[in-house]
Image 1 (spheres, rainbow, N blue to C red):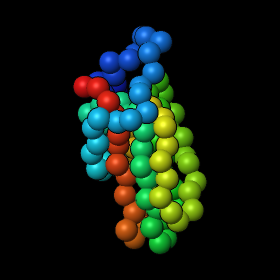
Image 2 (image 1 turned 120 degrees about the vertical axis):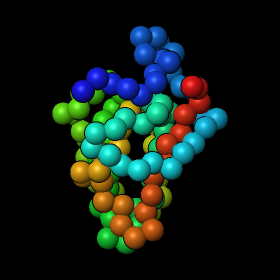
Image 3 (image 1 turned 60 degrees about the vertical axis):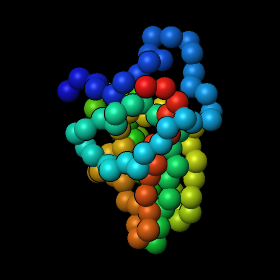
Length: 103
């Protein structure tokens, strides 16, 4: 499956700025890329949650990375194009917000 997330920084040495200008709640999906490659994620793991699985901007569809997390809220500075449904267990009250600056 081709990558469909907009990535204005691909092929450049420019990195995203840390103060995001845009954000959106993420619905994890095993097949659909986010609209934009992220500059960061805010992840809340609720009761019963165990972590998230993501595909980084340059990763293939088969390169999901599991990130185990304890209950709490985390901010990650990372460029991902997909938050996977498989491997993402947010728990009660959990959620993911994607942050980006361009696009």
